[in-house]
Length: 169
Image 1 (cartoon, rainbow, N blue to C red):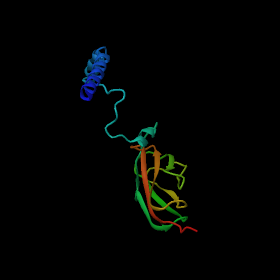
Image 2 (image 1 turned 30 degrees about the vertical axis):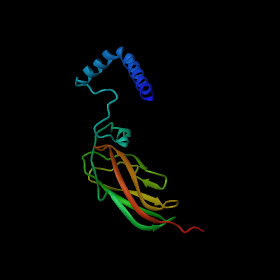
Image 3 (image 1 turned 90 degrees about the horizontal axis):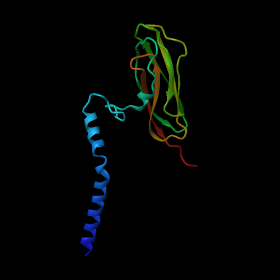
């Protein structure tokens, strides 16, 4: 008896779903038809989805290029509560003045200082990054995002450290 009630319930649910879908069959056909066109569907996810890149504004004026001596720095091992600094050096390798629009750390413990004035073609500049390990423990990886009039419009710098936890008091 139990088997037949379960089967009957499933059959009723299936019939209900099928009945609800009868009116939408041409909607499904239109959706399939429209997906065969060359237009990108409205809710389509880009092939390589990068939310930070989507937030970066495209430069309005002419673009240039910049190259860093290094894009990553490892502070090594440090004690919790230590504050350290690293300077990332870069060169404007393009033919237009380099304008650093925004420099932002991935959290409040990572604070970048970027030049405010334009960097002439061929000239060099520095970005100072301070990392405060207060409240941080073990492996730490933080980023600094730089938006500039470059192509691509965003550059990511990375800092790493292993933070020895402070002893409990």
